[in-house]
Image 1 (cartoon, rainbow, N blue to C red):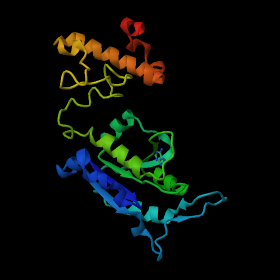
Image 2 (spheres, helix red, strand yellow):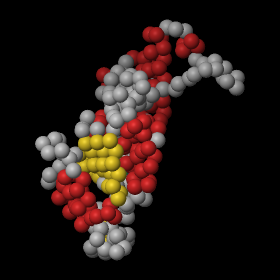
Image 3 (tube, rainbow, N blue to C red):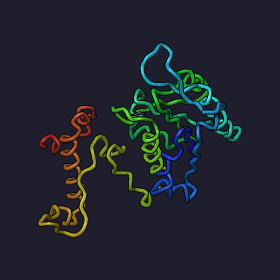
Image 4 (cartoon, rainbow, N blue to C red):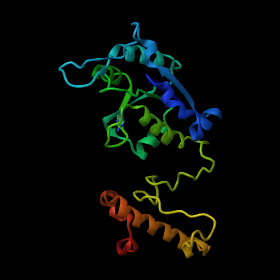
Length: 249
Ligand code: ADE
């Protein structure tokens, strides 16, 4: 997969050199290219923002540098191959979910446009929306100073789904929000050695070696945790996903 990020803070994205994403890049599973938006400005102050039409606080990112930058990045693709999906991080976007992460992980090319200030001139989104699949995406109901941290979040969520990135191919099967038998439930608690730590032991069932009982226990714990932390997920779920045992919890 190829990922391009156009930003006025390329250094903000240095974490993409470390850990899971950094390793995926080093192994050639992921091609990440960072671009400094200011390279597409032509004045001596490299201006990327201006005051909003209609008044109001803050500044708006100018369309000209974005247009030139995106034309250059999109135009660098291979003729005849699938164009990129443009991902625009904004608190006014659709929620970023595991489902969207899976969908994006199946695309060959993503271009992210993290904005600062009050956002990007609307005409840029319209212009590329006419030609490309453009997704305005929010990572949560809070406002950050810019879209760079959301890009780090989204790239990590997508990269770990790419074939070959996780050591164990099954590692994301049981993730919270992963499709499958435990869909709609959060992941339950986990334990490792030592068997006793500060007087606290391990639930007996995990030491029993009884796979059926362990699976049932994991599901009950997942259900309990979801009821406690995310009752909205239970309400939204298909009632057929729950059994009699769940209802006793
Ligand atoms: N930019 C600022 N806040 C954001 C958020 N919550 N999600 C995506 N982009 C943002």
